[in-house]
Length: 153
Image (cartoon, rainbow, N blue to C red; front, side):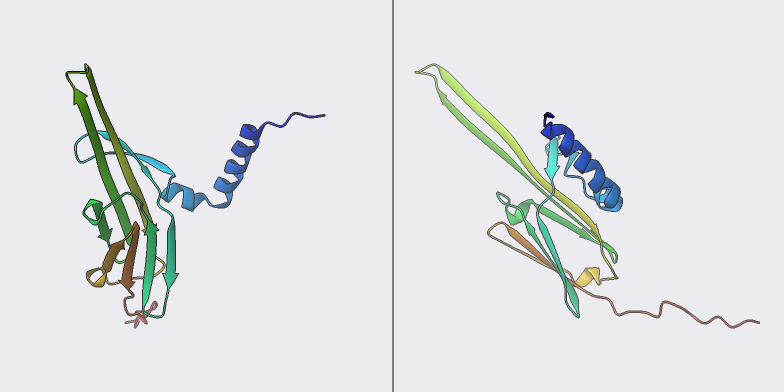
């Protein structure tokens, strides 16, 4: 009878996935360290994401519970998109008569960066946020001829 070591099996499975999808893991780590707006250290989680393609646009949906639209920062170029959201929670309770003081701080953040399959028009990108779901619509750029004929002189 052999012993089952789940952590060793999970490590092996992770190595196999990393070998199969090296670019994916390099671009979108599960947790990435960063700095908060207030200067504290924060670990960003990767939001669950769906990317759909239609004839004229790409539509991306990201799940970011606990975030408000003011916490979201989106940067778009012709061939990539970067989404970052950060939230700081603080609560204080104190009662000098009873002799206690309680303070709690928590930071929550999401980060995701994607290369896009073909060019988009960054200036026509629109985003809406509703009930923890961020939806981003990115209009496709007109396809240009990929090859140009060069005349020899």
